[in-house]
Length: 185
Image 1 (spheres, rainbow, N blue to C red):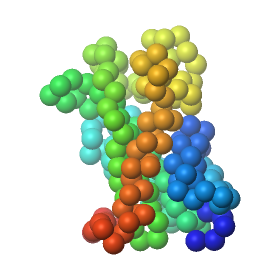
Image 2: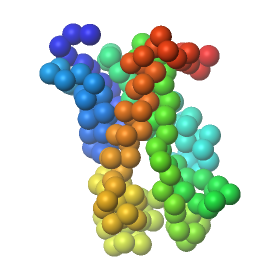
Image 3: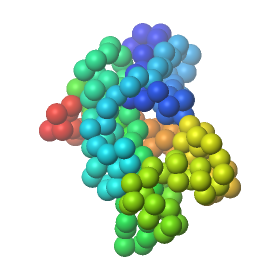
């Protein structure tokens, strides 16, 4: 790799772009990082309501970036919710493509109040529900539901950054992993 790394992120959300830059740049100290967001369709609902749908959204966004731009890394994050046996929770899937290698990871879960999940089932998006509940504006491009519900001890960006750093492991150590290729094989 040269002294410059190019990253394309499947979103224009500044929180996602910053997380991608921070996560990948930490592995390449002293290297210039060109990290830019772009519109990338997820191919899933605006508010994914299952684990599978959330994972697919992240992979679809990363693949779209790879098909439409030139970069060293293609990164995507998709936030979703699901109803688990232990309750309602939100989380994100991350997908990183480097050449033909695809690595998928997932953030920690944030438990959600039942009233929030019910609003999502009714068709609202998590950011909008949280804005109403906490009287905030555009929280999804700031600390997110994570920031609000943890009293700002964690943020949406910190959750994405950690998931992306962990998802880099197979790309940094390909000889130790059997990784899926871009087609998911």
